[in-house]
Length: 604
Image (cartoon, rainbow, N blue to C red; front, side, top):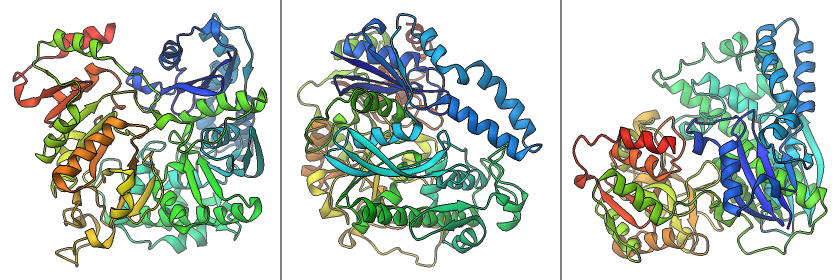
């Protein structure tokens, strides 16, 4: 047996993954355990979970793999500051203590934090980890790969070919030229938080018009026909500053950046739409070049830009490749899996298993799974009323959805990656015209413009959406078919005023441009969730439910039963499913103070 621990940390989302004899047996982000959103510290909790899941200790590990090369990243940092000096002194003084204390000594930190481990530590490059996370879990024997993010060591985009147990890097684009950082610059400028608010820009884009596209091409971005690109750095401050953009950027787009939490205007919507269109066009150009050069018929993707499901959906629709597979933990968290698989296949030269019909990601259900007895012990400690429904739960949940209840669903292994896929989800009826605003404002406590995703039976997806294929990880956007659409009552509306217009027979999951972010639900990977949707279809004729992550704004997705219960009790959710147990809000005691036992469980 060969056990390899993959680690990503110190920059964005820390995570750990355990690969045993080439199989991913466990993976999770650190934030789920510490409850610190986007926690980037050394992933103690995630590592302990992975080892416990496999029944191993650190002594049993053969290899630890870290997802990038810190020395090369430090080299890029120093060279950049020297190039921009004396500009950036404040940023330099802020960054250096962190590097000199922790980041530069990653190998020493690993041995310190894993005191019983004395084996080798491997350091694949950042984009090698991304490529490995995309290709090795995919269902293809060979495929082209595309990785795009903000920046790794020096690389910001790369592409090449994976075949068997090998990865061949064929082309890269280097810092400071980055589509990921361009998108983050617009995230910053429209008033959202960089490295977490990019998906808000994507969700806001359909409310706007692409009026700034030409300005972006004329002043900010030079793109060649093969998809290679360069940014005009006169407009950006990120290489050596504490801001993403500068005064020249402000002047180009008519004023300073929007202040966070201030009212959104049509300008922000148009900016979001414009940078989204540009991103899509660049991705398509690169994809066409990759297909031409590699002659591969399948494409796999990773890196933060691969979480842009609108661009992914357009890439799928264009048919440049026969199939597109995206790593569900496409950002830095997925680097943990990529590093471990790189060590197994490339460094150790271990063969890859034969392709599978789905993939080797196990539906991305790779996190912890509290058992019923653990849940029962917790519930008994609260003193609240609950109902056990083992073996008959799916039809009960489906009927509750049909009766317009909003349900917190906590069951099975937690998902790896940013999307809840039915095991740590809040679900509801997509037919309800009010459900989008109700779930956004009363349950998620987030911006009202944010769309919700449909979780649809895989075999029925093409009956409702302009989509053929699979999107098991909620990383493809497709249009609702015209047969299910409705004409908007007031065609003169634009911008955020479009929100409350009923657009289809499933309005709660239909965005203002008739699109939807799809999760195809497969009986093979999540039988219970598929059965819930199947039972709901028998009641409603609609083979889908709303699916959004089980958390509120600013918090990670729930990991433990007590977090799920706390979220249930403090939001407008009607029903909570914990394993095989069901709790109804109207049976909960009014003013129930759960702080004492929550504190108890936090200490355990």
